Image (cartoon, rainbow, N blue to C red; front, side, top):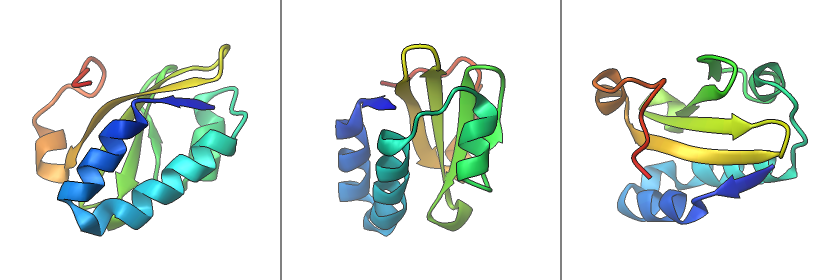
Length: 100
């Protein structure tokens, strides 16, 4: 998958160093993947949850943080839409959020 807005991951882990290992791992796995559906992403990350046919929510740093990604499965693109604390995630609409 081609990950769009990797710089947002780097900026986030710079401000929240406890997320760096988890976000780096997510990036490496996702960039090497050839996923065709939300089920493929969930199979790669057991704590991930398919929100709809396009968006998947990933747990970061043991579940203290959340990452929402919109996928264009046909073109192989992952768009980072949200990254934040679990509490901040609870305050957003994960199906429409687009912070980046």
